[in-house]
Amino acid sequence: MNEIVFRLLLGALWLLTGVRGEWTGAAPAMRQRIYFANHRSHADALLIAAALPPAIRRTTRPVAARDYWQRSAVRRFLAHRVIHALLIDRDPATRREDPIAAMRAALDAGASLILFPEGTRNDREDEPLLPFRSGLWHLARTRPDVELVPCWITNVGRILPKGELLPLPLLCTVRFGPALEAEAGEAKEAFLARARAGLLALRGDDGPESTR
Image (cartoon, rainbow, N blue to C red; front, side, top):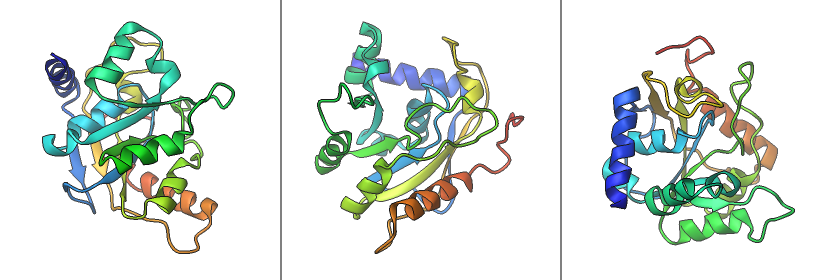
């Protein structure tokens, strides 16, 4: 049943958005990766999954906020039983597990990850990306064998705007860019700036008025 629900969700996204993967500088490969992307809607992880080839999709887990996905029985079912999300607690005051340790454990178990380094949805129309949090840096430094692949999701803010329950029918592309890695001796701030620039380079003309 869970596989059926997952296929139905992906089918609905394909129907509504025509989502496709556009690989520029990286190619689909059955190797362990961290796909890091811009974050504008709760459909983001599914859009990336839909753009991945089926064999890669089956070994890839989205990293998602526990406070959102634990909020209702439906969300819990989708997170745990359908998309197999790795849920992390974003609040240090209530956190019982180190999020970086949880992501490392998932990588050690053989999974690839979908990560949103902004840490939260970006609702600002004047800012394409919020500052990156440090998780991507820690993973790059301690798991150098795992490729880091930037992914830019076009039109994502319009597909599922804040406060809306249903996605809107718009064309969407997930652009996968060249993989990057932490350089020897590179400072955290320099690495995060370079990763952010690599992601922004995929934006192209996907500005606030873009409807591609």
